[in-house]
Length: 345
Image 1 (spheres, rainbow, N blue to C red):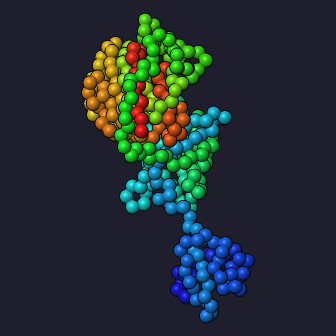
Image 2: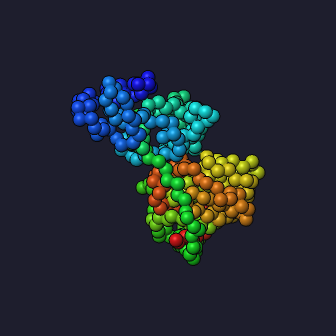
Image 3: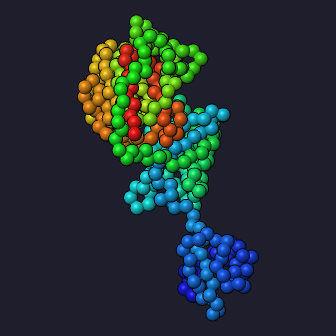
């Protein structure tokens, strides 16, 4: 017997001595082991079939994108993780927490199904790191996150869907999801709702609730006209998961965190923002993960893949349709047109 075969045999033997002895006696395959690669070994002129034991999880099992749901004291908070291979063996990644933008992970440690990493705080007023500890089993992630706020929260995770569409949709007719009169078809995510309609304009004059459509959408085009005062910050969440930034960034260099960017992920090819106080337009098309944005007549993002949910998302269930959400928990903003065109297959 080759020495490597002997090691494999000993490993299998140690899993279940009773089953092994029974199989020896009957000269049959080890039925308790999973089907797969098997190897015949000669031992004292007897043939014994040994199936290789299940190998521990490999880095390839972890590499990819994961949608996470974190239990934060009874509140289900969405989160997201991407793991990549850097070079021959080092794993790196990106992480989106319950707030903030996607941020890099310098190294993801993975051994025998256990995964952990740390990243520094982002918008939290603390020096404590976020500590992620998880377990990969049967294609699912679970574990705990030690949050910079001091809390420790459990999470579960599954692989993110590809959202590939086999063909382009057929587009319907534009629907005014803001009717210019009232908040019919919308609801606020907080008891105190600062959103109101003034002279046909949907207005959030102060920091408060986000405004969410009652209807959920899959693939669509969105046409909006908006304006904001100097220094303000808002956004539009597509399917309630991907934020397109609305922010006073006139004259700045483009950035994924600024006007027209998909928060923390996609950077516009130019800064198309107009000065604060002027009416501006977005024409957005979302098909699966593929996004195109025309801002003020300039195509600033062209058929780009959105990797995952952004901070502030309503949930991490990317395979499902989702609403349009207008960010109202930052700065003042106004909308005078919000039209949507549904895609049909």
